[in-house]
Amino acid sequence: MGRVLEAQGASVTAVAGYVPQGRLCNEELSSRYPEWSAEDILRKTGIRTRAIAAPDECASDLAFEAAKKLINREDIDPEDVDLLIFCTQSPDYFLPTTSCILQERLGLSTQSMAFDLPLGCSGWVYGLSVARALLEAGEATTALLLTGDTYTRYVLPEDRNVAAIFGEAGAATLITKRSDLPGHGAIGPFVFGTDGTGAEALIVRGGASRHPQKRRRLEMDGPRIFEFCLRRIPGLVHALLEKAELDLDDVDLWVFHQANRFMLDRLRKKTGIREERFAWRLEEEGNTVSSTIPLTLESAVVSGQLKPGMRVGVVGFGVGYSWGAGLIEWTHGGMQ
Amino acid sequence: MKTSDFIERLAEALDAESSELEGETILDTLEGWDSLGHLATIAMVDELFGKTVSAMSLRRCRTVAELMDLACGEVTP
Image (cartoon, rainbow over all chains, first blue to last red; front, side):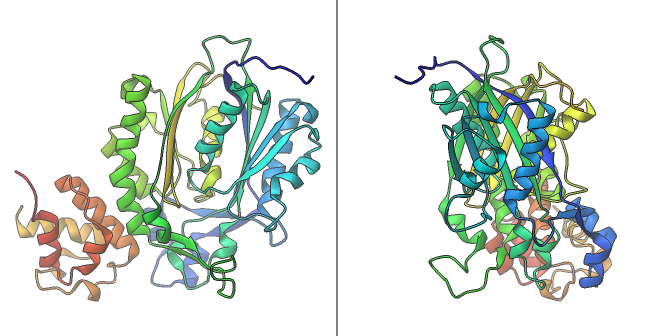
């Protein structure tokens, strides 16, 4: 008979990001699109440079580096990880699923459960909820939630609106059972939503089964996505607070998906979140899709904005449309 | 809202000179009336009138006056 695991709480124990070396700066964008000055791009997007993976660096490599950093820093035995979730929309292959390749590369146990979660900007919140559910159901004890995307491979030179927004990075989040910290480190509740009428607002049509002959091109209707965000996200945050029976001020820090500064400023104000309780990490790396929330959490820990004992609200939204929000009691302290 | 105030705010959103804008100005002739300009206009209308206009209805506007109708038209006092 196998191990019988008691159902207990799950907790976010550590987070680590990996940012590739390449950079696309506003000056370079401005030379490609002379009608835009570098200052205009910064003012309108809040982004100064975008992190770009090397041509031979895949999303899995970004996630692998982040995972390695986390495993080394937290001194984890990879054999103890029994759940691996890799959130990506730019997998290495159609099949097998990239998480199987990462299981081997990271030296995780062959007893571990590994699967991909092909969501975008909402993906980290979904992954966290799935990891928590599996841990609390007793199906696993130690989860590694990895994110990584290389969206710029899908960007065509003529599409300046997407070229100006997206960057590339990976992140790793460790979620463990919390038997030793009763009442602290809880994950949840969550609120989720989906609206497939927005499928065409952010889409890569070509290369997969529906349009195999079409080229892969990232098409984005920014104003439509913004309209969706304004309609959905303030209500999502308030639905989450209602579910948790909390007020806005009971949440110490909000980490939204870092889409672009302009959009987030408006969403923050509309939701009623105070400026000092809103975390940012956009300027140097751009919108790194499913990695923005863990990267921002990492920065907030390093800067001291996020401290153990705080309650964090995480809000992911975008491609799909897909959205989700959740709460985390933060326990994770210093980082080297 | 007075037309001149609306034009002032629209000019800010689109990086245009308010003196260049009037009701009959064709939006497509403005350099700032691109994807980011649409975004800025949606944000401006949301802030001023508490109303989210759809990207599609925004694109249907031909002139500044039509845009102002869209933004102010259904405002409840």
